[in-house]
Amino acid sequence: MRNKTLTAGIIAHRIKNPKANMIVYDLAGHREYYSSHSSILEHISNTTPSVFLLLVNLLLTLKEITVQLYYWSAMIGNVCSKCPQQSSIIVVGTHADCVVDKSNLESLSREIEKVAGYAMKEHTFVQFTALDVTSFCAQNLNNFMALLYGIIDDIRIKCPAISLGCHVMFAFLNDKVPENVITFSQLLTLLRQEQPKYLPTEDAEVSILLKTLSEKGFIVFFDTNRADSWIVIRLDMLLEKVNGVLFAPKDFDEYQPIASNIGIIPKAVLKKQFPEPVYNIDMITEFLIRFELCQPIILAPTNTTPQVPLTSSCPDLFFPPLVCARRPDDVTIPTDAFLWQICTININQTFSPRFLHVLISRIINQFPLPAVDMCPNPDLQPYSRSCTVWSKGISWVSEEGFTAVVEMKEDFQCLMCAVSTTDKTSTNYSKLILSVIDVISEACNEFCKSVSRVERIVCPLETTDHVAITIDSTTLKTAVSKSSTTVRDWTGKKVVDINEWKVKEPQLFTLIGVELKQAVLCADNHTEICQNTKSASSKWRAIGGELGFTFDELDSIVREPGRNGVVDYYQAMLRRWLDWAPPNHTDPTLQHLISALRAVGKEKQAANLLKLWKK
Image (cartoon, rainbow, N blue to C red; front, side, top):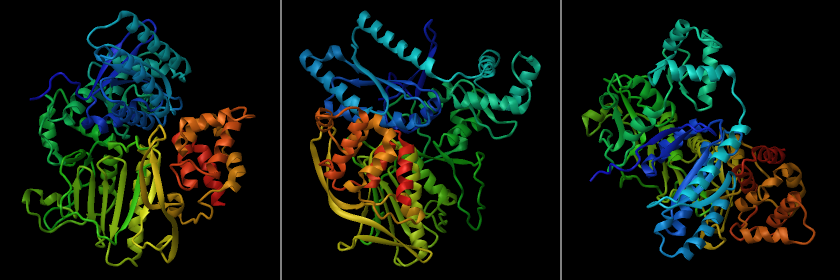
């Protein structure tokens, strides 16, 4: 039974008001859309801060609501990472009128506000408000709208103004171009015919205005330096129709079974699903590829099939978000494999589906995958490669015969990379390990900025304290320690103990071949750290939370006699962390401190520490 009442994709509502004109994007809440939501919001919130309304059902448990708040907060942090101003978040509790015990509603609201304040520490968390669903209270709704318009007005004042040319170009596109999509050459022809005031007609000057509007999220301009570069004026078609259909869950009325279980959609099928003249298949393909929702398939070269160039004209597309196959039974990890993991520290945080899907796509793109001579299905022979893809991972065999597996755990809190070979002395084996970790780290830094994480190496030799990796006759020693890590939730309550090898050194230094002598910090490093990160003091509570301190532990620092000001609090918190460390972390490591600074947006201070220890 398909559901016709739920939101499919993203529906845009344009609201005109004397106080503010705005576009409200209604996002489907189903997990199948998470990856495409992130991709599109990265464009919309690139340079202009947004207001996010997070809806949580008050009939759910606090634990379920907490998981939702942490996920959406991390996603907002990732998609808004390039925006110079913080985005604002209002948490709206729905179904308030359905909660029988009103006293329980009050306590739940307080707990939700407390969780939201902690989960959204890198954003501007405005407030939590509860609204009814079966009936609307005019006063509550008016108060809510007044709050919303006040935030929007504040953002409008703080945002940098765009040029008159951009204003006039945006008005021209909306008033004079009836189509949703137009090419660059068509726009130039129209401009030269109309000769509007304040607008240029030269290619370079028009291109600059379009790029600015695209960066601001007003339009989408696929600049390819060609006359047929696409300009998407109104995103509604792409957000609701294309996005809504391609990634719709199976119980949605919009769902169409056009993808294989390994996420392949022939371009001919895509063209049939979105026919002309309403749609343009080349523009849709360009949109999907540019937003990294899919990639053109590079056909495996065989005796009869030449390799097809990586262009949008490729006959078929691979969509990692649409892979539904399970991990095959024959994909196993040898006991002597090199095993590297990156895991979340906070029990409530998870890695995003967007991160996993882009990672799979990039791995297929960046690593040579030899063709398989024989394929059980002749129709799939052109795509036959020495790799296996499933919904949460990928396994492949390199040209040298090394086997690699990258897989996300079911809870999305741990990503594993395993590489195995019979010849561990091979230089290419070590290069493959570092290359795969480099690709994972780059994608993680790009799409999981708000997630506190730790790297671990599971070493097969229980007695060693280093893992030696040889590259071009140079041996790099990656320091590891085996100890118990206590994972705690946001309240400080112990959840589980983990006994694994933890990387003591930042991965960056391993990759560039610099051995870090003081990866494990001590009290002697306090002065150096404070001097190089003093400007991060304003975020001392957020940094403390990332380092593992609870609310009560941070409040106790404020209550200490003689403490005065955020700089003093920051230095005291670091001193306490270096002396004994919070209970859910064993060693105060440089990697953990750098990750904490980056998690709260203090990239410059994190870079200062890297430079200091590199010397």
